[in-house]
Length: 152
Image (tube, rainbow, N blue to C red):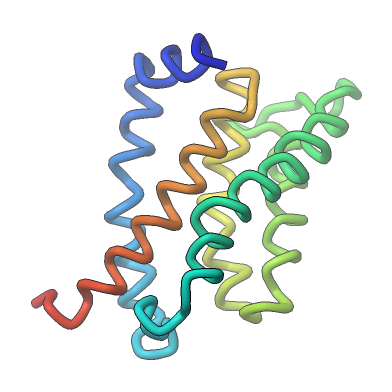
């Protein structure tokens, strides 16, 4: 585990993906507007779920299990640019899983992050970097939403 995390932090593309988290959160908060709600009112359980449990469980299920299975056949490894067929199909499933909670807006909103998580699952051949990115992106959104009234 430690070697994979150290490898990730030496990867300039991974560092760029980390840096994109707050920028993406600002765009997402702007798109959601008041519909985003106030994280201060969500309660501790929602924050624990969003920041700790969901990143681990979702990455194990989607990037670990589903993407892992889809990478086994040769067609799953076919590339469309930097994205494998396995990553694209897994991201569609990931987006569909978010539809019941937030409709089309949330499903569409998790597509790009889902592709990023899948990309790093394959690039780093493991789940630590997508789990970390997922948690960071969620934390970035919470922090932006908490600060949103203060933003210009």
